[in-house]
Image (cartoon, rainbow, N blue to C red):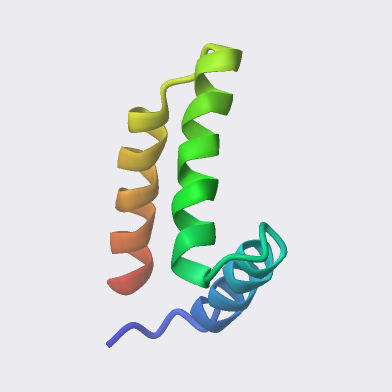
Length: 65
């Protein structure tokens, strides 16, 4: 179990973003947010999969604090 005390704050921040994203269910809102992030990356010349990979590394680091 992680000792990262910021994880509950990270979860709340994510819930706030997902809850405010659309009137759909949370999982549908999350899927829409991710798909829209892919469009945003394309529009701005960013690599979504690179960002997702780095996010995955951050996630693992936070779990293994």
